Image (cartoon, rainbow, N blue to C red; front, side, top):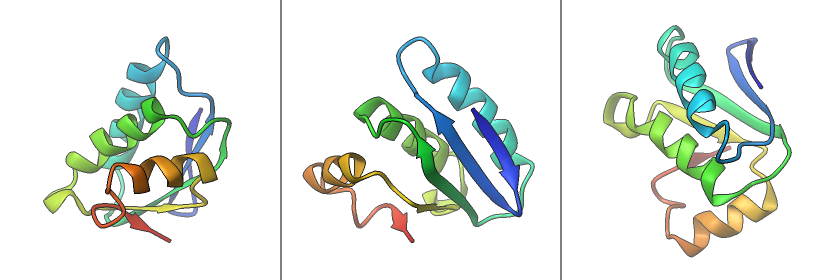
Length: 94
């Protein structure tokens, strides 16, 4: 699900309607316990859906100036959603 390794938040598995709130709450606790900015690695995320993106944006909104998270290894499908929603300037992608 979620883990912190070497100052990186690793997101794994599939975020769906049944577990999205759990991902959000658990991730928020982990993020708040770390120095910012924090890298969020999505390489182990099973599906880059709009719901998964919504969870990431909710986390981001809880950081100072909504810039405390840097996203890496963003799935191709999620990149297309980000571009279609014109969010590429709001998210820091590394």
